[in-house]
Image 1 (cartoon, rainbow, N blue to C red):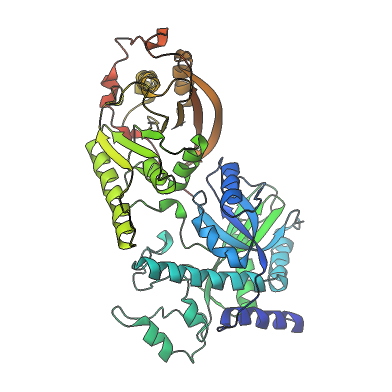
Image 2: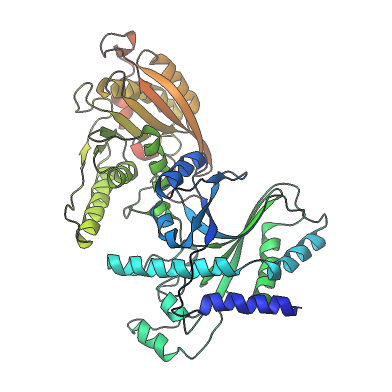
Length: 490
């Protein structure tokens, strides 16, 4: 039952959603972001650099939190290391869950009406307006629907048009027929007030809870529905309420992104396409400088060099692979970005990037000509086997050492075949020195990002330079698409 105070709070929250052109004074909110597991501190570094805010790394790996003024909200969409963004409604550092399932769920039901929703809903509305402006500026069509809602071609946005919310909250013309003028239809319906559609998503970690994620989402969602009188819809929702529980830490939030940002810049996906956010994190580890030559010798779909050339346009990127289909995808993805720049009216629409099909163990590059090598190495899980990596990895490291500058050259290499990589690296000890390792989760696999520094040894003067005749590049016959990453991992 809703008390008088709760009813008043609900009315205030609805006012936040329904406000017209009234200007609000900027206020500070806490924004949360999911990031590739293992790159939390790299993401926090980017937040400090681009927003000027100190980010806190969550106890639950893969999340960071930072405070931002609402007049700087647009800056969060310039972050490249985050997968999803949400505004925090309430954060509990040590929430005491009841011992029995019934009591714990009843507690969550009673919590929903007393949460401070107002500021979060106002930020959600502001964020809708920002997304609308970006879409108009790009001149792009409707964004791709969420993967969970692939059957909804008629709905142009997963969240409502903010201009429609002013008079018609909760309805972004979802019943609009293809080919009709959405703005005119909404103007006609502006006197009709319809409830927002919402869903609750619960992410829970820990073994001391008496309830499941589905239990929490169902009961908490029911209380949210009763409080706001919103309509529950698991697919065609306007508002996504998040309930993140990690042991005794609990965060209630509202999503600001419709789908994970890790799919940006890539239109032609391969079976092993690397997440763009993970690619960006690897690039930050080598800190590209002006005029640096950066090479991805196993580029796959080109996620790493594309992220690099967009963010560090004053460096030069070379991408290559031994597989012609991978090269084709990379070229298509580059052309897509070039076209976007041209459509956006860029004065210099070109990109400082080039692509070639090559043999990884015999790169068509001069000795000591490369500053950094960043690549996603084959895991040997799908079409090939780890046995082939025992020959391939040492040959890779030797050829990478040849083209890298002694003393300053570096390599950032991702692989899940840690044992094979460690053995290969030990055999190349005169050419490479390991600086550190970042442990990451890639499609459910525990992998390592190894950061190496090229030693000062001149290539051709160490025992490691001598090729073993049984370690040739016949293992290059292995399709580089053996790398086992899914295009989308949760």
